[in-house]
Image 1 (cartoon, one colour):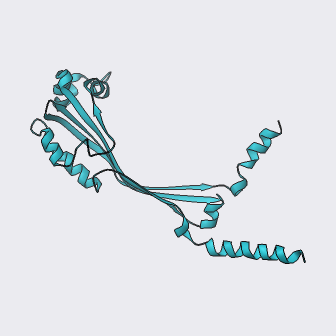
Image 2 (cartoon, rainbow, N blue to C red; image 1 turned 180 degrees about the vertical axis):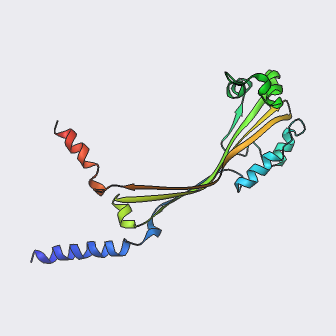
Image 3 (cartoon, rainbow, N blue to C red; image 1 turned 90 degrees about the vertical axis):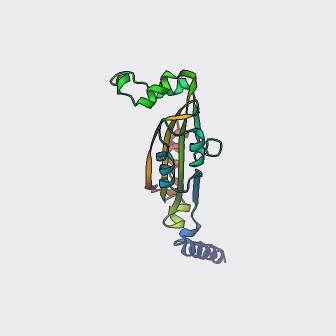
Amino acid sequence: ATGVPTMLKLAALLSFVALTSGCSSMLPVSHSNASSFKSFDEARSAVVALVPMQSTKKTVSAHGVDFAKQPNTKILTHSEIVRLLVPTGLLKREDLDPGILVCVQARDACNGLDITASRISKRRTGNFFADFIHYRQRTETTGWRFTALILYVDDMVVYRSWGGQPAVDEFDESIRPLGPFQELGPSLVAGTR
């Protein structure tokens, strides 16, 4: 009589494994939208459209670069700009972009924006059961990351640059042969000391 409940438990477990073994739709998905820009190209175009020594803060806002609306934008002080851009060894001051020199010489009238924008999606793929028991977990990361630096003297843009990753496509796989028991080994060894 004790064999029947055990067989029912085993049948239930096997049914669960069979039902969930291919259900990748049950795996976690996350999205990070740290930008008011919809794409890398839109962000790049907004910064490239700024003309040093001609564009103003109003022009910057008109192109969608507004530090009050753009998340992850740092407002830089003159001392932060000097620390970030003034060379300490190999480069000389005359090797710097003229806009950087104008900004450094303007002292407190100089400030800037350090912009970090991204849209990243992380999706776990593969077998639900293997992921659930921590045996094999696969994560695919896609999206884009954009950075820009805009320097002002008073109301005038004196320097702008941009960079980043137009296409992020990363794959991470973690295999733990003992699954949920992988973490027990170190704790058992530490407990015997």
